[in-house]
Image 1: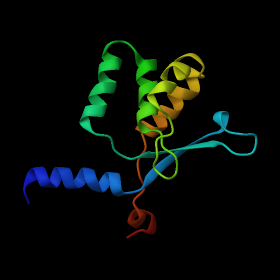
Image 2 (image 1 turned 30 degrees about the vertical axis):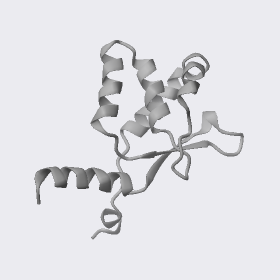
Image 3 (image 1 turned 120 degrees about the vertical axis):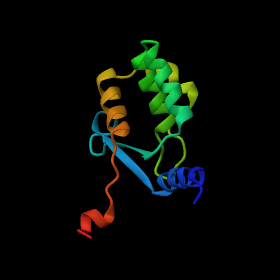
Length: 118
C-alpha cells in the first residue's frame, strides 16, 4: 500500500469510528448534563490553527476555538457557530471550558476488542 494512502485511510477510519462524548454537569440542567460529542481526530490544519493561538499566548481563545471546532450534537452537526465566539470568550466559566476541552483533546477511544479481552 502506498504510504499516503495508508495515512489518509487511517485518518478516515478515525473519523468514521463514531463519536466520543464528554458530559458537562455545569452546563446542563438540574437532572441532565450537557453532552458534547466530538470526533476522535482532527486534521493538521485545525491543530495548526489552535497551536498558533497558543503560541501567541492566547490559550483561552484557543480553548474557545477548539470547542467551536470540535463540539458536536449526537447527530454530528456543529454545536456552536463562529458567532458564538464572543459569548464564549466573555460569558463562560474558564475553568469548566479548559476542563472540557482538555477531556476532548485527551480522549482515547476504547477498542471493543480490548474491552472484550480479544
